[in-house]
Amino acid sequence: MIKRCLPILFCLCLLGGSGAVAGAAQITDAAGQVVTFDAPFSRIISLYSAHTDNLLAMGAGDVLIGASKSDGAEDLPRFSYHDGTERFLAARPDLVLIRPMIERGYGRLVASLKARGITVISLQPGTVDEMMDYWVALGLLSGHEDEARSLVSTFENETRRIRDLTQEMAAKRTVFFEAMHGKLRTFSKGSMAAWALELAGGINVAEDAVPSKGSNIAIYGKERLLAKGPTIDIYLVQQGRMNRVTREEIKNEPGFSLIRAVREGEIHFVDEALVSRPTPALLKGARRIGQILYPTLFEPTTEGLTVHGQ
Image (tube, rainbow, N blue to C red; front, side):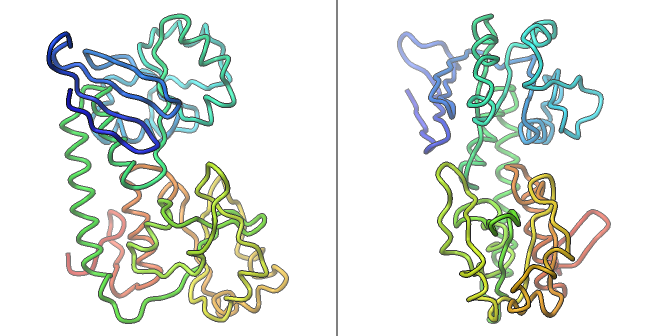
């Protein structure tokens, strides 16, 4: 047996040798469930937008027969964890991809699907290293392993190009990265958003943030933030469904005049889909942050943002 263990998220095993099915693979998912399969799945329903985006990115749209209602994928039937079991059965999936939040909140649906012979796998990486292993797992499940590994290679190469550009900068800008305005939540060290900020050459003033259990979000608190206010160059805000705060709300927050970035109008927003989802778009998020921090180094293009001179 050749075994490659992926911390926390799941394990991938390529099975071979006496008594094993040639080419079989085994995944232990986020719930600790062990799934062994000797052929890829061909009728997949994805209930998490990141699963959908990644499968499409690796060319696995041919095996996707349904996606969640919040996905941007067009022309796919929409499914929700609020739907009844019968709606899933009518679509005849052989795999339903979920994430731990669905497993915890809608366990009866998950159990019902499994009882009727449908494989249900829960995946959600917490770090960038886990994310790339997760892409390979999706590739194995969908029959697009080579494409998944190519996605990983491209991501790693572009990451190196950006890091080579920013890591030797003498004067880096300090940033507070707001995840959610309520209780001033920020991203903890090791999270994907914090990784994107670091890759872009930013210094995270809240690197000491301690995440809530089972999360990469940390309550930072106003008192601690304001104590660092004079040192903050950029007030960066994740914006989307998780955080709908406006620029005016931030500017008018009591005490925020002590934050130099707020006082000088350096309040900037980045789409949560670019910094909080485990997809290749994370690189776009890093480039977007880089353009905010160092506009002469990161320049906008018709396709998004690119590194100057590359």
